[in-house]
Image 1 (tube, rainbow, N blue to C red):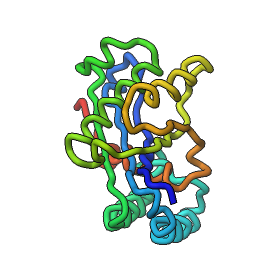
Image 2: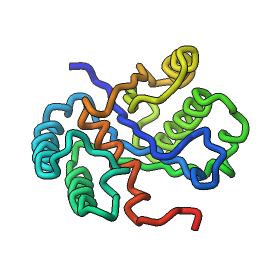
Image 3: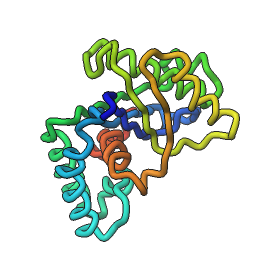
Image 4: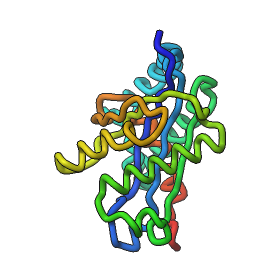
Length: 198
């Protein structure tokens, strides 16, 4: 079996917004060794399916689960506990202040911003030992709305410029439980029910 890590990433917020209400941009997700994929699925997927059935929904979205008009946030918290207790995965969250971030000020193209934010995130993960300097890894992100040229840049730049990146792919979170987990992690700041700039 191949030896590499998988990094599943979703975002919360708008990376190219100029609005104060969108000041904070969040990346969240999980990291695991590909060799542990089946055991992770056996621990988490049955629980996720059960909660989807209880809530009568077909996808976990943090933006819908933090709504004060329902009690979905109780299940949200329970899912986060299961994620934390799974010894085969590491979770992460990065909150970026788009008003003070040099990346956001210097780069205007959306794909460049994503590339540079993920590059910074990977460097920080190495500094904090979430990943090792010599690790190889595949990145999977929830679909990002980009035109064809920017999407190609996004998918190839990191692989060509960052040691260890095998590939970067995007997919619809509706079809991937682990992308839904990443969405829930990226949405953790919403659980407070407060706007972070207030």
